Image (cartoon, chains in turn green, red):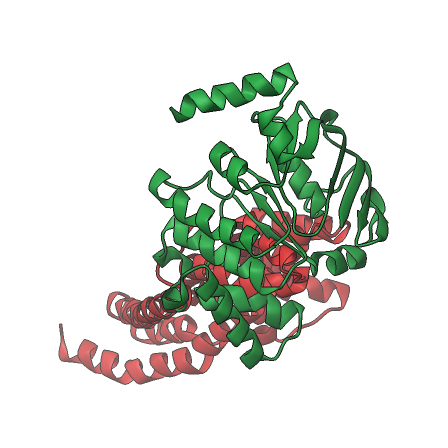
Length: 247
Length: 227
């Protein structure tokens, strides 16, 4: 469904992505693993055009796009099929939870208010926060804010959702609730690309794993073989270091 | 205080207050409204980084902030006629006050817009909104809440600065007081009186500011958060 090849991105001469290829099919949960500074977040931001790639081709649902030269209009059209969940939630601070979810539906998708409200409430129900619909972001915990952000992503019925370290900014006891919500989405067949450091979550939920290190994809393969039959020394070391941390 | 002074104060009070209501307040309200329009436009031009226009805005702010308000009033009222541009005193005062305050408020508004976390802009893009939609619905309402106290400051300043318009023959409160004082020689009493009226006006604005802040807080969901 989504295929990217030769993705490159540099910031002021410093090359962050050195030609990354990846592909996912409908229903895939691709987790992106790797050490900090390996280019995971930049990769994800390029995939949703929050950063403009220097080179790369994207094929999305059969449509071929040249990533550096995609027009603003084409980007907007593409984004109507995608959603993005940020590490720091980025809820609209001046809107209630319900309004946060409705905003894109009404303004960008021109949906009638009543229909948008119904859909937004259903999305909040899905993340277990229907009773908080009138709360402002400042009145919610980090975990709740992230779940509202997920509801906002889901409400647009995207074909793929990008998660950028969705639990990295959360207190440890709030992480579980957010991961549960993401896991439920996975069980419902939602296609997702998740940048994460939660190795156990990655083991349980992902169908595919992309391993990023120093701007390169060292592996992009099904999850089973990635975790069980890993041959690359670099990845083995990385996994072992995480397992040790978990103990 | 002698009976004469008290009489002078009592008879002059409605006259001075009257000029305040008829001239000082309209001058302040019209100038400040225009200043806000100028400020938002200049701030948006700088934020959106529109080439050419941005340099013009920076130049305008540089000139205005670097020269005294009184000099600007004299330049426009007494200086421009040399170029054949003659403005009546009141419109001239409005133009100068609006342009002057606009430059200061532009910086306030720009800072307030920049204080809204960038992530909300990106989140807006990701749910499919356009730049203008995000600005109008997400960023500007929050920026307005941040800018409200400093803008109230500017408004209070301007109420008092309008007294400078007396120098270019605008018959506002201060000039009226000067006239009465010149006739009666009761300087201490009369200038205290006009000071009290300025204080009244500014007290009302302070109340309005407090009410406004409460209302804006409610609309923005409690205190402004910076996530």
